[in-house]
Length: 113
Length: 114
Image (cartoon, rainbow over all chains, first blue to last red; front, side):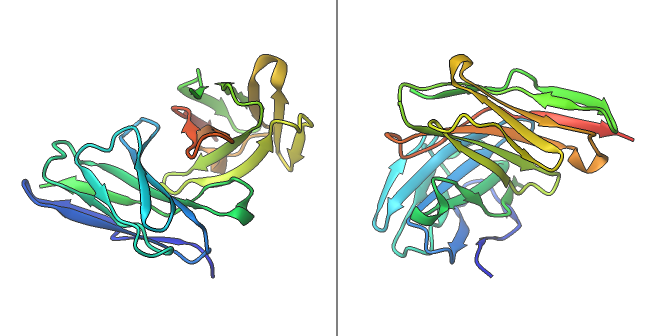
């Protein structure tokens, strides 16, 4: 089945630790996105990539880093510089065949110990 | 710049009532796309509908219907005969063709009580 997978479902981070959230898609989509959602709030764009080996900062990129070495994968690293990382993280992708529609993964919930 | 406003933060209805979720948008692009997504308690955003700016025809899908009006920059979503399973957060989103990214509203939390 085609789709977007995110792992892990839950992630715990200790202070000062970097953690990486995985996002993989087998939809052959060119564009991928990372959003952050805080309780009771909307989605805020962290980073996005429209093509392999290229990515742009979104609205809240500070404290985060990404890479796009493969079309299928767009991992997000939450660095120790991100002082308030507790949130729900959603990955999405969009392709030429999806008629401008973004499709979302199931999300990763990050908690700070 | 793009902007999406969902003025209704929370709506509560009793099962079988009709309910309309409002969405107002701003964009300078002449060609753009509007979307509605549903976020159930599990968290994953589920795509419901897409509309492009050249197609103002309203759409009905079962109990769901959408009213797109360019004159008022609105793209409202109506659920007819609501059910408990419709309880979720609903997001409206906008993407202009000159933007590589979409803009989401803050969402409307719909609670349908039995």
